Length: 443
Image 1 (cartoon, rainbow, N blue to C red):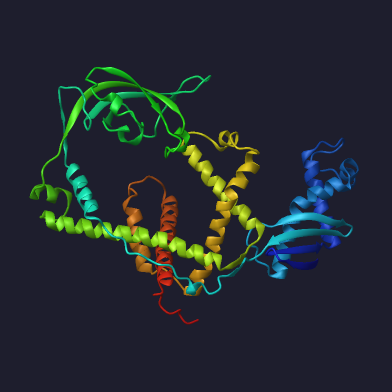
Image 2: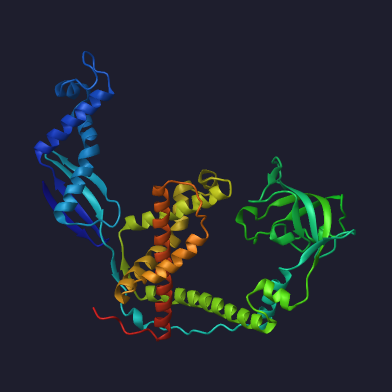
């Protein structure tokens, strides 16, 4: 086997491989046998026809095409091993250069070239988050309201009441048959908080139900705005058929030592208030650091030189589309249906997702290099601690054999390691942007 390698500027290697004639002949005889097993050749049982008979029946070119199904991948594998090339994505056979001698051309995606330059010189201003006292009091009020009791009242519903009701929503579209609108995990009867949007699902419907009484039926029209958070509902005209089964009023207790103990491990409201303030500050700081780290990473990417093979970007686009497909399935629809709304179908969708996919790929390559340079490695005790968090939300009594449980455990451990590493990256990037990063570890 003779191999020529041409390194391209696109992080790809072009392999031109001339295959030894005996190897080609052996592959063609095996291919001919497979073809004789599939077809009916007069006078011979399947798989028993001589090579010459198969050759006369199908022709040399057809046999060679069949042989390439196995010869091509095997030649590719051997060529990579001989040249010590590690592909970064799936390679392709581009063409048959010649048939005599048989010479194939392969395009191999190779390792990206990542130069993140002087990434440690990136600086951006960082502001510590402030926690308004109103936010502390709002959180305390939510805790107090969590101890509220719903009591039935014999009167029409008022703003702020809770209405127990059967709700049936119908989508009304011009020239189309009305279809039911169902939310995930929604069952009748429902408890509707009588506010503007009935808990967020039905914009503007709350005021239209004020005054409804037990046993009353009422029809309410809802128009979803184009800015509605759930994309599939934007612009829809929906009619709600509501049957009131009862009206309840929320009784909220005043603060007392018993209420404080019911919502926390503290015994006084002042202690709880300080705990809430500290927790809010911790969460706000984590959120601010994540946002800040994203900005620093974007700045690092601007000053970096990152080259990658096109196949890596194609794989990233594939992953974006697979993620979209899973989301659509959760919404009880499919990618095929979604593609009907996209100009150019799948080709158009790939164009749409390419910018985001490219940004994610560049970010991933940059962070991989940064982790290597900074020698960031999650501590085992941190991984174990995060693993316990995951395990706590999974029932130990879940059915399944030990092999399945071991597989789940391995997956959770990998997720825990990734989470800890992500935290380390955010922390280090934040330190770099603020100019307080520790010195680089020695090589």
